[in-house]
Length: 93
Image (tube, rainbow, N blue to C red; front, side):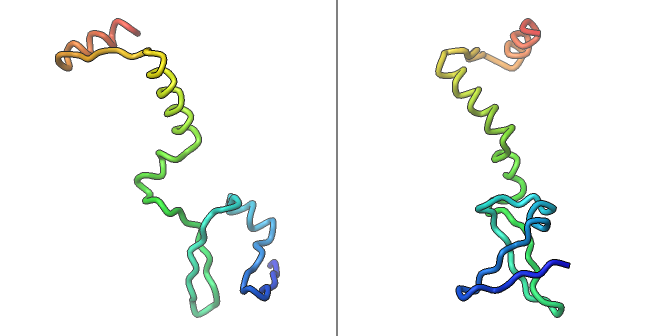
């Protein structure tokens, strides 16, 4: 068990080991709940879970690559229909 101290501004420091085990980063949010046993701190995101994938480093990297390709004019189409699109994609393989 680790111990922390409440500061005059009601703040606590999360012990380093707990911080690492929870994969927390500076600026992350914690939901605070009062239980019969004490405080329950739950790491949380302010975006809905079904949208969290969009904010991953991997997805944002690909978004940047796509934006750069579009800016360079490296785009295909427009296509008249899906069959035309599929033919185009098959040729690129």
